[in-house]
Amino acid sequence: MGRDESTARGAGPKVAGLERAGSGEVAGARMAEAVATDDLIFFSGITAQDTSLSAAEQTSWCLRKLDGLLERFGEDQGSVLMIHVWLADMRYFGAMNKAWNHWIDTANPPARTCVSGALHRPDVLVEVVAIAARRAGEGES
Figure 1 (spheres, rainbow, N blue to C red):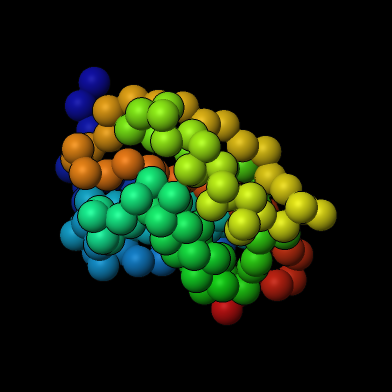
Figure 2 (figure 1 turned 120 degrees about the horizontal axis):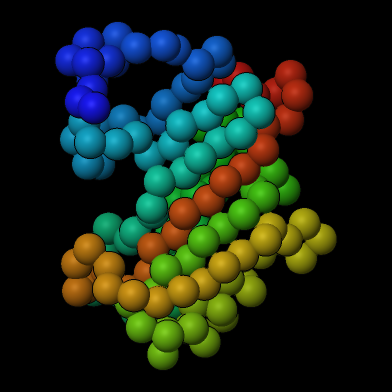
């Protein structure tokens, strides 16, 4: 069954409390950098802008970018529930983990997965996707 043209253009049902960050800033109109409901924030794949960086440096860049996006919603690392890390090759696991260990709040670590596979460009070594909770009454900024 095909999509109704009005729904495809955004005229469909709305979700209460829905906010988007970075829509159109990075990938045009294809996606938002983050979408938040009253309870959760979903972050799109974050990759380093400078892909000449090493895997450790790309990881650090992605995690700093995540910190900045969290701040846009009034949140911090303590609200992160899950992070998915994609590596272009598992040989970068040690370098990624070194950057991760430098960034992580060990008192509030999120759940994490790490897998490898071909990413959208050969010079992208690391991609990070995250889900965070919004604190009650603090979600709007």
